Length: 569
Image (tube, rainbow, N blue to C red; front, side, top):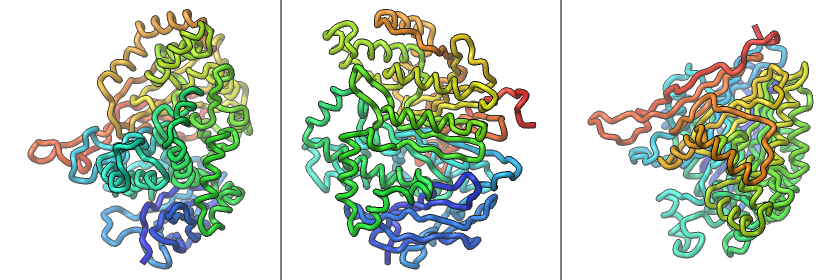
């Protein structure tokens, strides 16, 4: 009998009331995959084959807007989800109300940087997983507020920091004394990472019932992926790198990217059609990944989703980079043009603009100035010796955020100011990010004032489940301090770095721990909640399997939008 290997993941749910959705699954052999909903909605698809694995992205149609319906997954006519012995409530698909209905709330939860949790019963060295803890709360109380969409902003898997269980699987396959050692080497080993991360029972159920949008960051490939042109040249000289990058991009396309797309986008995707039609799509996908690595400008991983009167732009801030030191940019020209068009088109159609980018736009001021100074050194402004020093520092200190691409930082600032100008300005523009292993809220102001009622905020939330070393905490606290700001300005003057068009301050945080942020959007109002996963204790007072006793504790709650003349009543 055909079995369900990974999934189901509820990915796309139409936010405009069209009654459509997609459900992603991996089966253990070729099969016909089907979703059946309790209200009669459903859909079916045949699995496609990549490198010995079998996947389906099942389109679901006929959902009734404004309702929630339980669903089942069948493979070759046999029900494989939910399992017979499940302890979780039924997985459901919640279809938003149609346009014109009374406005409801939209709850958007987000975070980044998640190591897979250890199996139940094993101690968790980095504390409880925020996603596991959210799943436990929702399963225990079906009436608890639940996200309408979960945004995973990078480092969904760690190709370069594998668990003991994964290392055992790798060691059974090859000699770990040879490079890349205990890191993943190819597509097959990437499948182990997704298997480990997404078959965790709590997270598996959560992802089956809460829609998700994803974008990669560096650890999905390797730490500091695409830091600089010289970094890339060094990596391409390694004998194992080509297979690693092909495996990373191929697996991202299969496991994450496809589910980000709408049914209409999938229908227009020539590669998706070709892979589905082929008896074995491996070589097609390898050729695509090879070309995407050779010419990143030929592929767009960024995408747009509309949820009623909220627009989400998920921006690729890793693969789309231009690394030439003299024209360094976070996004290539076509990508930057696409982001601009999506932000400015039909501004009166949305009240809130969410810009999802794995890397924060607004960093602690010292770190921002350090990265801008380093970029000036690497460009050669102080000569070749300083340029070599700047490159070594850039790699050692991970100086490769938006601030390390100064022109791109300024272009994003200018775009946000333009979005927030005029009568069609939204109530909020929220830049949602992760990566930096702490959470904070920062708010910018433009030279001369923005002249709008739009609230612009940088919301950073990381990690979902990872370590936060003490030295990292000290470094980020210093980055926000007055002394850090003074030292950063001194570096900027040395590098002859022009002041940015925006200044900003921290209005919340820094907060450390495994955590999730949630935006609650209704009309032109927005609320923010930050929750941290807190471990419980076993009956004998000893820390054991913390998952069952862990809880999400509210750390911060605030309103982001002041009520102006256009605010909803």
